[in-house]
Image (tube, rainbow, N blue to C red):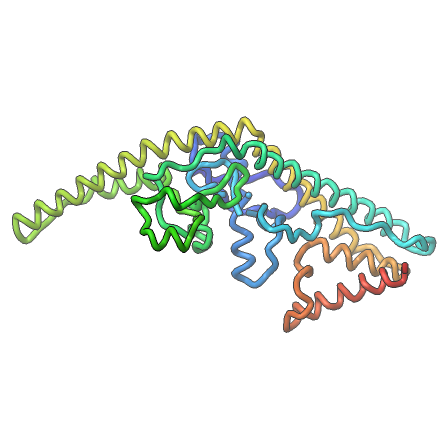
Length: 322
């Protein structure tokens, strides 16, 4: 599994994303795009498309890009509304900074749409992992560490496959209760590790019968993982080829760059004095652009207080324009 970092402008916002193809420069650039969404959820923070990018999978088992642009609840995916007409007395520097924020948010929205387009356009070409590579179900609900092994599509969204055809591995009752499921996908890295472990394992037994049984278990395991290795290498090579052909890496990098621009613009707004109520509204919208204060205003504790304050400031400005 290769690990790398996407180039970022400003604070890093991407998370580890393994790729399972050849160790190329493009593989390494994609490592910083995936499990942040799950980590944020575990901490009770909002999980936005931006955070997911901070997490675009480990594409378990194959893809160069990841997980987790899933949530439509994106704080800065849509450009901010125009300011009130009465800004004659507002700080000019603040107004210009707000214009840069609006432009950055517009670019983020366009970049996100472009990546979504890739996901839809290449959907019919993206292969399912061979059934022999499938592990446990509910892989999309795994712990943060193992989310990277969940099966994903070309842009890193969890892939839920039809279970009705998996008659050999799933019980009828399970298939009836779970029409679609996301599965763990064994990777070539995992297969090589298991093969190495089994190769070093020396079967033992207190009796000849037990020794024969343990040797058979080891040999059967070796044969199974060698088959999985062969399948995983082919699957990972094909998904890596499709990801490169579709331009997933530059599309994902575009989102990371746009996200950095939004955060940079928002940070600058926070440092520029406001002269009027409209200026305070600008500052509130800049904070909201982070996505951190875009949650439920009824949330208890300080976090809810922050959310209610920001919503109140923005709401007061909007009411003044009516």
